[in-house]
Length: 402
Picture 1 (cartoon, rainbow, N blue to C red):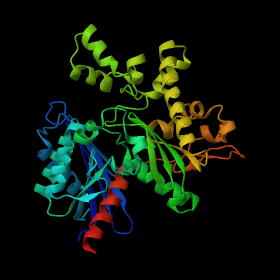
Picture 2 (spheres, rainbow, N blue to C red):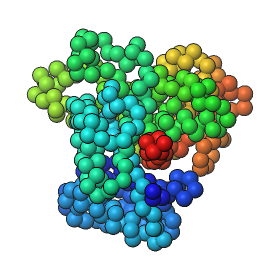
Picture 3 (cartoon, helix red, strand yellow):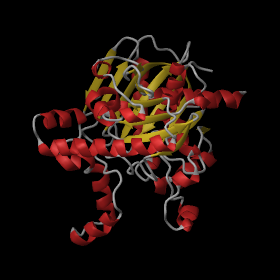
Picture 4 (cartoon, rainbow, N blue to C red):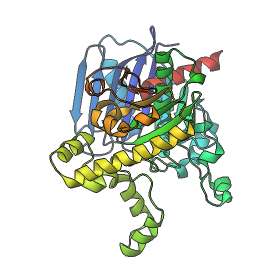
């Protein structure tokens, strides 16, 4: 067996990757992304973390995922001092449907199940499958699929069922699935270690706030509810996604704007959210322009926060108020003290009180930012989805050899 795990996240026109050395514990030694595959504007960003060397290339000729992965291998082999061979490849797969709820060795049956879930994730699963197929051609080592939806497989029917004809669930699998599962898996593991308590005794509300955003209610270490649904569109207002919306908007826009279902879906996914309200996707810029007096940017921030607090309150009730911590993670959750402050403001009666200085202080790694006397702790936990995939890949391969 070799001494490294390669993690791949294959998108429709992108390929993210990270290489983990297994000499002692899983340690990231290189990572990068190829964007704009098949486009003249294709770019490659590669980081060698062993020697802090960065490589950036614009206008690279990467015509497809196969040539992209070959370029990745070329870059990894150029890393000074890197002689590890790949022992396993871990793939991020967005949707596993109801059939695939745990990380799994890739087999023909697993690939068929991923393909079966394509209608539930038409923008993601085909690309994820392409990444698997390309990797199978280039590697002889085990391939493992890790599913974004897997962490949420413990959600009970009362939380995942929609109020629609039951036959739609039976025949089409229409139900809440949830996403960001690898991030939540990592968060739970880190918080349990921090509190030095068994995972099965851990109750938290986890807030994954990035360009895509969601919340999860986690009871006894398992998810009991989450904000995203069949797809990542449902739930919170996000950078470009609308989040919860009345389905009647489809009929209204079809009638008044003569838009197709595909066009409306594209708008709700790519031109809505805070971007749709104020024309800006980056939360830091939204906050800066809000503070400068822009009414639209202030409104976008208020709508964004309102939806977070709405679900925060709902999940507080789901957990009966017996909560160890509220956790903020991902880009916005980790970096924006203002978003954390606004989300938690006025929740003292619920036992949640932030410490102003701790919340605003710079820092790395997991840290507590609640005020002294706060019944519920408030944590910042930098997420590492690639590491979570690498660790789960190792577990699956080791179990298969046991």
